[in-house]
Length: 279
Image (cartoon, rainbow, N blue to C red; front, side):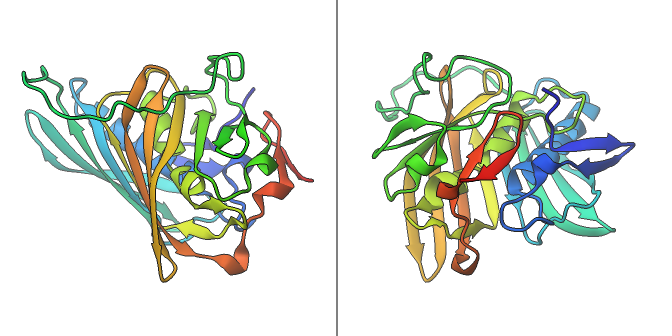
């Protein structure tokens, strides 16, 4: 399948239909925006010749709706040290910034001796007979306590805790999606995993913060809701991020109530070719 969020026209990224948000037909979703910024950040570190560094933290600010128009990304190295590198990226449309990102890349070393607490109960992927290992993009699997694992969105429009399992879509046509790009793009789904309830999706996220203790093993990424707090229309959702080898880190999103433009996920069906239809 030739699926991607953008096609490249020189340094310009042209959104495809896969980048279209469900909030508005002329708006890009955060998955595409976050993936494009991660691609730029990764390229910025590669240009420094720092193959020794790993992405450890990514924060994306979605401060203006990104439209379905051509866009460009640029990066700035804030600081490069022996064990740490800070890089910023901006996504612009028509010369105006619509989203920005900052990332921390770290040099790995040996784990120190000593015992430190970590949770024993970790989320795991769906059973392989439900979701066989693959690097081919597919409709996400969702798990809710009321329905178990399935790709039928209507099964999960309920108020119970959710998980998702995703095989990432390439950011740019003709380019293989990297594990970091995959995690960065899928991390935007933390808003869906934590803010999708019995009334549909009634919050729109304004940012994403992804932390990674290691690189993902491939492009299959899982998210599991850990916590959610809401007050006066502002919601904070936290998810555990994992792959088939185990835990990777976390993702946190903040979101604003957007009930007047609720997305009814129960009335949507997706196909693996990227098409969707209303039920």
